[in-house]
Amino acid sequence: MCGRYATTRSSGELSAVFESSDDTGGEVGPDYNVAPTDPVPLVRLSPQGHRALAVGRWGFLPHWARSAAGAARMINARAETVATSRAYAGAFARRRCLVPADGWYEWVRSPEGRQAYYMTPRDGSVLAFAGIWSTWGSGDGERLTFSVLTTAALGELAEVHDRMPLLLPRESWASWLTSTDDPAALLVPPAPEWLAGLEVRPVGPAVGDVRNDGPRLTARVPLVPVVDVAEPTLF
Image (cartoon, rainbow, N blue to C red; front, side, top):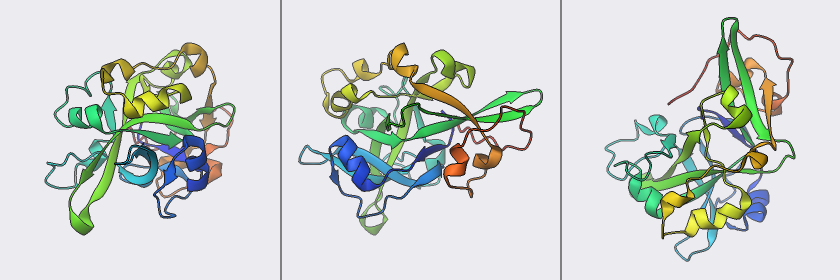
C-alpha cells in the first residue's frame, strides 16, 4: 500500500456502519487525500469492550519512541512480520483496529510516465483496513496512533502494486477486534470473489500533491500517460 487513501464518511455514518459508539467529538470530516500523520477515524474496542469510533494519527508510534519524528515511516506494518516485530507485536496481540476507507491510491510507472489509480468498491460500500493502534506520549501530548497492515497484492490489484492493505470483509470485523486465541490466523486476505468487487480506477495527477482535496481526486480519467505525478509510496 502506498501513502494515500480516502475516507469521506461522517462520524454518524461510520458509527452506524461499524455499530460503534462515537468518541470523535465531531472531529471527523471528509478527506479525499489522507497522508501520513493525518488525523482520521478508526474503530477499536473501548475499555468496556464495545466498539468505539475514535480519531487517530496515521503513523504508528510505539510507547518507547523518543519522539514523533518517525511516525510517517510507520504507516504500514507487513502482515508477514507484524507478529514478531519489536515495534508492532504487542499491538498486534492486544490492540487491533479497523480503519474505515472509501479506497486507496497507487501509482504505476511506465517508460512514458506515472499513472495514479484509485482502488475502491464498485458498490460504494465502506472498506475496513486491518490496523493496529498505540497511544504515545502523556498528558496533553498523548496521541492515538495507528498503522495499516499490508499483504501481497492479489488478482488485478497486483498489476498496480505488489502490496495492498489487508482488507477485512464485514464477517471478519468482530474476530479482528476481539480474537486472542491465534491472532496470526486472522492474517488472511479476502477471497478472490470478494476482491473482484473492487474497481481499479485511473485518476488524475492532482492526488500526488497533499494540498489537494475533494471528490475530483477520485474521478475516473482517460487512461493516458501522466508525467508530472509525485509518487508518495513510503515502504
